[in-house]
Amino acid sequence: MTRFIGPRGARLVLGALGALLAASAFAQTATPVGTWQTIDDRTGKPKAIIQIADDGSGQLSGKVIRGVGEFDHPERRCTACTDERKDQLIKGMTIITGMRQDGDAWDGGEILDPDNGKLYKCKMKLEDGGQKLVVRGYIGVSLLGRSQTWVRQQ
Image 1: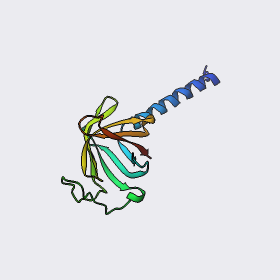
Image 2 (image 1 turned 135 degrees about the vertical axis):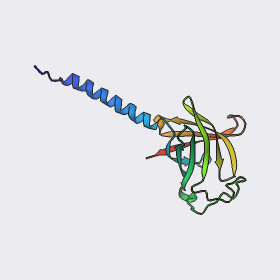
Image 3 (image 1 turned 90 degrees about the vertical axis):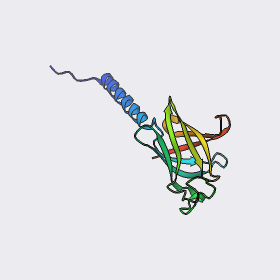
Image 4 (image 1 turned 45 degrees about the vertical axis):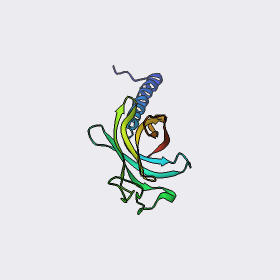
């Protein structure tokens, strides 16, 4: 004889299914890989869209997809850069390199500020269920730096 699940059993099954779906969604956002809108830490305004990708070995890099608002100038160049990026277009430029996971954060890489051409050590950490990324650029020790909170784009 076949027995049907009653209302209480159905709620348990639906609750378990919901928990699995939530865990799956979190797993997809438990990494910085994806598209992010940068927010300038000084002005609070959106500045650029950055695509962060994994090179296949677990190392992350990020490139500028486009500027936002007053920074959306496709011909904008990194005139202050002093390395091979000197006078290169900022759109399409790799500004984050060498990031590796370290526990629940990413560390060990560098970030370029195309406005001043300076390279900084970089740390990143996800917040708000993977919807925000706190990016810290610093010289020497992490205490001497600036942080920006980037917002994940869908």
